[in-house]
Amino acid sequence: MQIKLSDFCKANNISDSAFRKWMVQYEEGGLDGLARADADFGPVLPEGVDRTEESYRREILKLRIEHERLKKHYAVRMNEAGEPEYIRLKEKTTK
View 1 (cartoon, rainbow, N blue to C red):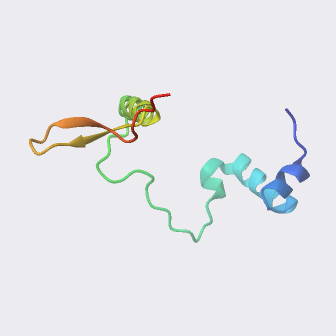
View 2 (cartoon, helix red, strand yellow):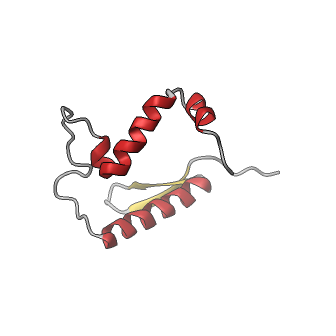
């Protein structure tokens, strides 16, 4: 599906000229090209986080599992013994 630049800019409340400027900056310098020279950007990940592809894959898998549990109205909490237990967030309907 194609959308006109002016329609996209209007829907996102930005001017056509600003969008074109950002596109040129991105094409010339990637994400770093979009950063202002006077802006102080910290690292995206906290210090000490493993930045390997495998760690990202594990994190995505954990988030997918958590998402599926939440869709089924379950959450995980630690009991007094420090063991994880699953709790139902919402009562089952009997319809």
